[in-house]
Image: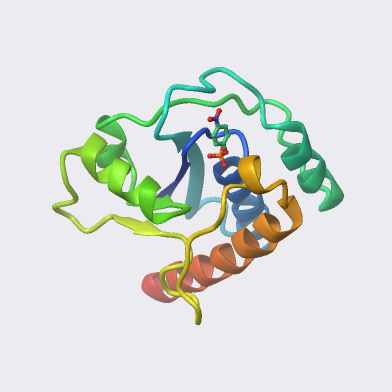
Length: 153
Ligand code: 4NP
Protein backbone atom coordinates (compact mmCIF):
# COMPACT_ATOMS: atom_id res chain seq x y z
CA UNK A 1 0.00 0.00 0.00
CA UNK A 2 1.29 3.45 -0.96
CA UNK A 3 0.01 6.31 1.21
CA UNK A 4 -0.01 9.88 -0.09
CA UNK A 5 -0.69 13.03 1.94
CA UNK A 6 -1.52 16.22 0.01
CA UNK A 7 -0.72 19.41 1.91
CA UNK A 8 -1.52 23.11 1.50
CA UNK A 9 -1.79 26.12 3.78
CA UNK A 10 -5.42 25.81 4.94
CA UNK A 11 -6.62 22.33 3.83
CA UNK A 12 -9.88 23.81 2.56
CA UNK A 13 -9.01 24.52 -1.10
CA UNK A 14 -6.05 22.98 -2.94
CA UNK A 15 -5.08 19.92 -0.90
CA UNK A 16 -8.65 18.60 -0.52
CA UNK A 17 -9.17 19.15 -4.26
CA UNK A 18 -6.00 17.10 -4.84
CA UNK A 19 -7.14 14.43 -2.37
CA UNK A 20 -10.54 13.94 -3.97
CA UNK A 21 -9.39 14.27 -7.60
CA UNK A 22 -6.52 11.83 -7.00
CA UNK A 23 -8.77 9.35 -5.16
CA UNK A 24 -11.20 9.47 -8.08
CA UNK A 25 -8.34 8.73 -10.54
CA UNK A 26 -7.10 5.87 -8.35
CA UNK A 27 -10.61 4.41 -8.24
CA UNK A 28 -11.00 4.66 -12.03
CA UNK A 29 -7.76 2.70 -12.38
CA UNK A 30 -9.03 0.10 -9.89
CA UNK A 31 -6.08 0.75 -7.58
CA UNK A 32 -7.94 1.58 -4.32
CA UNK A 33 -6.39 -1.41 -2.57
CA UNK A 34 -2.86 -0.24 -3.52
CA UNK A 35 -2.94 3.55 -3.24
CA UNK A 36 -4.53 5.59 -0.44
CA UNK A 37 -4.56 9.35 0.06
CA UNK A 38 -5.59 12.08 2.48
CA UNK A 39 -4.92 15.81 2.92
CA UNK A 40 -3.84 18.23 5.64
CA UNK A 41 -2.79 21.83 6.30
CA UNK A 42 0.46 23.40 7.37
CA UNK A 43 -1.52 25.95 9.41
CA UNK A 44 -4.10 25.58 12.16
CA UNK A 45 -6.22 28.38 10.68
CA UNK A 46 -9.08 26.31 9.23
CA UNK A 47 -9.03 23.31 11.58
CA UNK A 48 -12.39 21.46 11.55
CA UNK A 49 -13.77 23.43 8.61
CA UNK A 50 -15.34 21.85 5.52
CA UNK A 51 -13.98 22.30 1.98
CA UNK A 52 -14.42 25.91 0.84
CA UNK A 53 -17.64 26.19 -1.24
CA UNK A 54 -16.05 27.21 -4.60
CA UNK A 55 -13.66 24.24 -4.33
CA UNK A 56 -16.57 21.99 -3.37
CA UNK A 57 -18.54 23.23 -6.40
CA UNK A 58 -15.57 22.58 -8.69
CA UNK A 59 -15.36 19.00 -7.41
CA UNK A 60 -19.14 18.58 -7.78
CA UNK A 61 -18.82 19.62 -11.46
CA UNK A 62 -16.50 16.63 -11.83
CA UNK A 63 -19.05 14.39 -10.11
CA UNK A 64 -16.95 14.20 -6.94
CA UNK A 65 -18.45 14.61 -3.45
CA UNK A 66 -16.18 15.87 -0.66
CA UNK A 67 -18.95 16.29 1.93
CA UNK A 68 -17.36 14.68 4.98
CA UNK A 69 -13.93 16.28 4.68
CA UNK A 70 -12.81 18.52 7.55
CA UNK A 71 -9.52 20.42 7.66
CA UNK A 72 -6.73 19.21 9.93
CA UNK A 73 -3.18 20.35 10.55
CA UNK A 74 -0.40 17.95 9.65
CA UNK A 75 1.89 16.67 12.39
CA UNK A 76 5.34 15.22 12.63
CA UNK A 77 3.78 11.73 12.94
CA UNK A 78 2.44 12.09 9.39
CA UNK A 79 6.01 11.77 8.16
CA UNK A 80 6.12 8.19 9.43
CA UNK A 81 2.53 7.38 8.42
CA UNK A 82 2.82 8.46 4.76
CA UNK A 83 5.12 7.42 1.91
CA UNK A 84 4.76 10.66 -0.03
CA UNK A 85 3.93 14.12 1.41
CA UNK A 86 3.11 16.51 -1.39
CA UNK A 87 2.78 20.28 -1.06
CA UNK A 88 1.11 22.64 -3.51
CA UNK A 89 3.77 25.36 -3.47
CA UNK A 90 7.33 25.94 -2.27
CA UNK A 91 6.15 27.70 0.88
CA UNK A 92 4.13 24.60 1.85
CA UNK A 93 7.18 22.40 1.27
CA UNK A 94 9.41 24.62 3.44
CA UNK A 95 6.83 24.53 6.24
CA UNK A 96 6.32 20.75 5.87
CA UNK A 97 10.06 20.19 6.28
CA UNK A 98 10.03 22.29 9.44
CA UNK A 99 7.02 20.43 10.88
CA UNK A 100 8.64 17.06 10.10
CA UNK A 101 12.09 18.05 11.38
CA UNK A 102 13.62 17.66 7.90
CA UNK A 103 13.10 15.08 5.18
CA UNK A 104 15.65 12.30 5.78
CA UNK A 105 13.79 9.80 3.58
CA UNK A 106 13.13 12.17 0.67
CA UNK A 107 9.34 11.85 0.98
CA UNK A 108 8.44 15.53 0.65
CA UNK A 109 7.91 17.18 -2.74
CA UNK A 110 5.79 19.72 -4.61
CA UNK A 111 2.88 18.49 -6.78
CA UNK A 112 4.15 20.09 -10.00
CA UNK A 113 7.90 19.45 -9.43
CA UNK A 114 7.93 16.89 -12.25
CA UNK A 115 5.61 18.74 -14.64
CA UNK A 116 7.06 19.92 -17.99
CA UNK A 117 6.85 23.38 -16.44
CA UNK A 118 7.71 22.85 -12.73
CA UNK A 119 5.81 25.42 -10.67
CA UNK A 120 3.74 26.35 -7.62
CA UNK A 121 -0.03 26.05 -7.64
CA UNK A 122 -1.27 29.57 -6.79
CA UNK A 123 -3.66 29.70 -3.84
CA UNK A 124 -7.23 30.13 -5.18
CA UNK A 125 -8.22 31.45 -1.74
CA UNK A 126 -6.31 34.57 -2.81
CA UNK A 127 -6.57 34.44 -6.65
CA UNK A 128 -10.24 33.36 -6.84
CA UNK A 129 -9.30 31.18 -9.82
CA UNK A 130 -10.57 27.72 -8.90
CA UNK A 131 -10.62 26.60 -12.56
CA UNK A 132 -6.86 27.16 -12.87
CA UNK A 133 -6.23 25.45 -9.52
CA UNK A 134 -8.28 22.46 -10.65
CA UNK A 135 -6.38 22.22 -13.97
CA UNK A 136 -3.00 22.43 -12.22
CA UNK A 137 -4.01 19.89 -9.59
CA UNK A 138 -5.35 17.47 -12.21
CA UNK A 139 -2.08 17.75 -14.16
CA UNK A 140 -0.05 17.04 -11.02
CA UNK A 141 -2.25 14.13 -9.95
CA UNK A 142 -1.98 12.51 -13.39
CA UNK A 143 1.82 12.74 -13.27
CA UNK A 144 1.90 11.38 -9.71
CA UNK A 145 -0.35 8.44 -10.50
CA UNK A 146 1.78 7.48 -13.52
CA UNK A 147 4.91 7.61 -11.33
CA UNK A 148 3.35 5.46 -8.63
CA UNK A 149 2.11 2.89 -11.14
CA UNK A 150 5.59 2.71 -12.70
CA UNK A 151 7.24 2.39 -9.29
CA UNK A 152 4.99 -0.59 -8.49
CA UNK A 153 5.61 -2.52 -11.72
P1 4NP B 1 -5.60 26.43 0.75
O1 4NP B 1 -6.20 27.92 0.76
O2 4NP B 1 -4.24 26.52 1.38
O3 4NP B 1 -5.53 26.08 -0.70
O4 4NP B 1 -6.58 25.60 1.54
C1 4NP B 1 -6.29 28.69 1.94
C2 4NP B 1 -7.42 28.64 2.70
C3 4NP B 1 -7.52 29.42 3.86
C4 4NP B 1 -6.47 30.22 4.22
C5 4NP B 1 -5.34 30.27 3.46
C6 4NP B 1 -5.24 29.48 2.32
N1 4NP B 1 -6.57 31.03 5.37
O5 4NP B 1 -5.65 31.82 5.62
O6 4NP B 1 -7.53 30.93 6.12
